[in-house]
Image (cartoon, rainbow, N blue to C red; front, side, top):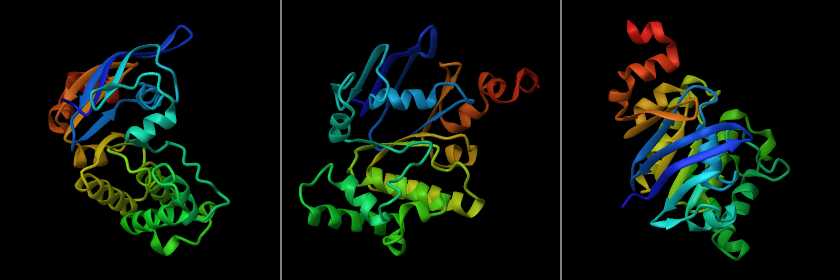
Length: 241
């Protein structure tokens, strides 16, 4: 049984179907990439999975249980954590304070929350930044803090939404290593990313969207050679060539 099953998912905004009958399964322990041109519905799917947006039609199943329509905090308690494309930490809190706040998803005391926060800080390489205000971090630091906040909720499935966007080459390599470390902790990852170096380096399988619909799924190598994928990203002339 798959850890996550997305079944015939539809999300409409008025007459526009941003996601139109999309289905895929994410197996436990894998890194599953979700890619496609801008506006293809990737982040909308994330928002449907954790009920940030209500689903128009279809079902989302996690650990064999239908979670469609559950409150967002209940979905988090079940074991789905996520990051956001636009990082918005609690800017007036320290890095430690941000992660501690997230840890309260799983614990009931400040001591337990801070103990968990310190474990996550060390794991994410943020220990030296713990006393800095979150708003003072550069982009790479805020992106890493976003991941740390999600990890503090102790997810079994982590949704990563463009965590590598805007990073320089060194920061990008560091982000890839962190994602691999997370997978090594037996946390399953569903990742949306535009940077192909990230997707092709770390993904076990890739699902490709265009205009809200599935156009391909398979290994990174297989998907990279798919004519429909090449056309969606580069245009019809490249697909024919």
